[in-house]
Amino acid sequence: MKKHIISLTGDLASGKTTVTKLLVKELGYSIYKNGEKFRQMAKDMNMSVSEFGDYVEKHPDIDIKLDDFAKKYGEENDYFIIDARLGWYTVPTSFKVYLKVDIDEAARRAYKDDDRKDTENFLTIEEYKKDMIKRYKGENERYYNLYNVRRDDMSNYDLVIDTTNMTIEEVKNTIIDKFNEWINE
Image (cartoon, rainbow, N blue to C red; front, side):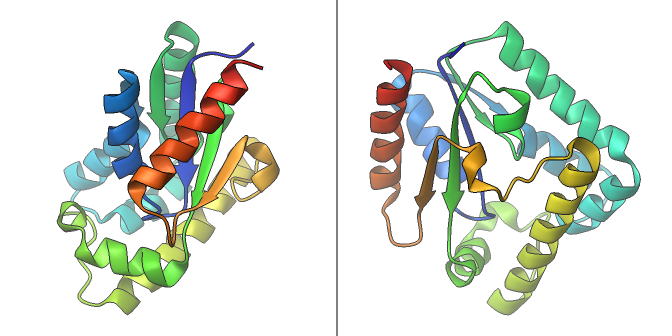
């Protein structure tokens, strides 16, 4: 069964948050964001998101709780965008989108993003890059150990977009076009 839900996941700094905002505005959908909850929990514990990720690795109940919230939300709601690492897995009735980005471009974007400064305060682009690689590997291991799923297996998704050289408008329009095709199949 398909629902009017788009799940967005992808590489760090691939444009998920920005494109989510544009999709919400254009489609009139609501938004569900696991990442905000994760970042707030890290901040509440005076940890960077990377440090909190290491902590969560030893406390899998946190991931399970966040994913259970997303799953329940997807079962009870329709017409929303889910911005969550495992949104595609927790809400299988969604149109599953993965955004990719070149790691150098991702680090550059993260470095320039003031919204990240309170939980990811690195002094150089290279520091961001190293942290992103570490977080990506750690998250993939956690999700495999918890659910036996691989977020980096592109066959899990209905649409994969490399955002490295695209404008955010192009990304948004591609998602909407492909979503409309998918929902009307």
